[in-house]
Image (tube, rainbow, N blue to C red; front, side, top):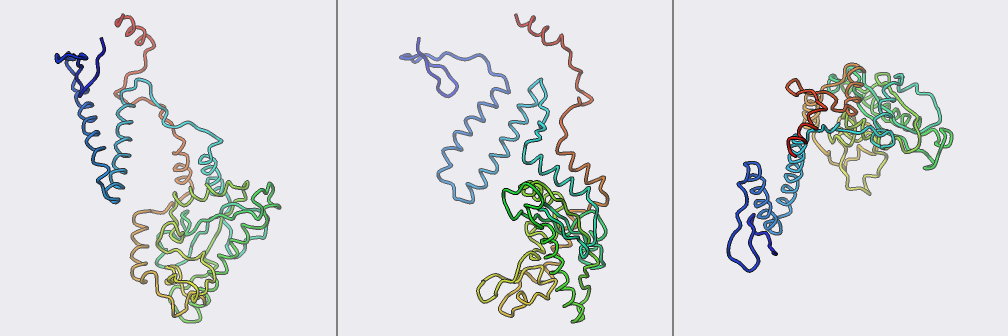
Length: 327
């Protein structure tokens, strides 16, 4: 006989009598309640404002994660948590970033001219009070990438001397503001001798994901993505043709002629930038040694391989016993 479902009850077609289901377990009752609430929520979605819709979407994504976690807890077979895939771009990016850390640190002012594109990191070891928390540590003040001249380059020679060019440009910016500070008696001038660099020539396109992992891990204070003391990578923009404000880096380290135009306003006050830098280092303690860096890099590849102390060891006979008892 045909039948259909309505609100968790089964009705006979053409009849008003109700066929009651078996008594629900507490878990089933909770799940049905969740379904009913989800139906009510979906009815409200068209009425939400854009901010409310954005917030609701984020909460739903979080709820999906919680539901998946609960489902995994019920599964008698453990999920390894990750599958190592050497061909995954993220995996390649992590390995390239880790290979950069294995390179020797050299003075930024004495980087040899060589072919190749890839990734690099710049370290500070001077006495500027703003950067004291990372001075002489394994946390870079800036990381970046250098793309090849030819997007299809297969060799360092075909890539061109791109890494050298990027580091040379940063060296020139630091020297300009350092000389300005020295000549004008400004406190704590940047000195090129206080900077070291690591660089890694890598296969074309590997630098893209590697840079992302380096920024996410080290959160370098001069990188644009951190949004605090960015601007060293900005170049000679004409103030008369741009509505941009003076970058925080140029506020803290004046000297680049184009960035000192009177028509430019500061992106932020020196006091605000100093406060945000201090807060950043409080939230992101520096790496003091490479061992800690290696452990954090490798943690992304860890799989769930062990039982918790209260979990029984797997018994191969248990599955067959359960099958027999259910027959």
